[in-house]
Length: 162
Image (cartoon, rainbow, N blue to C red):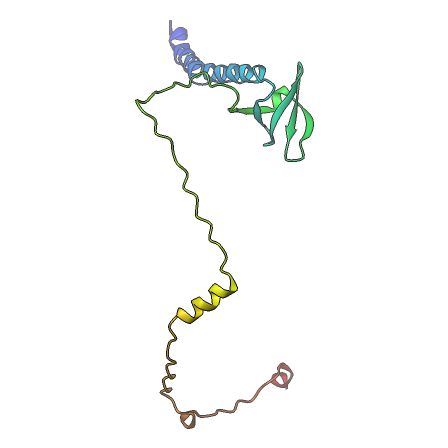
């Protein structure tokens, strides 16, 4: 009886660890494997190494992805896919459409183009602008005669050692 009572806390700890650690990890692993097996041509993916690309071709264990503006293609293993980015061409499964009574179209406001002034218009514009009067600079508070000149002696490192 004492032996079973001693093992009860240990068994309870193992059960708690199973429900807190092992079961959620297996669930996440199952979701990741399902995501990796469901990738299709056209999906945008991010690899474990951080490379973003678009799937061009799928094979059993490998994927060919297209990367960058140069459209470089290379082959990666299926297990290297970290995340599938939602592509605009593939419909979302969980998306719900909310319809409003009236949708007003959004009008883009573009800046007006300004035409360049011709030389004749530039001259006429210059004539219309008022000419401002020149304001004399204020006189400084300090007179030049008030400034003292102080002479300093320059000491080089060689002279300080002597």
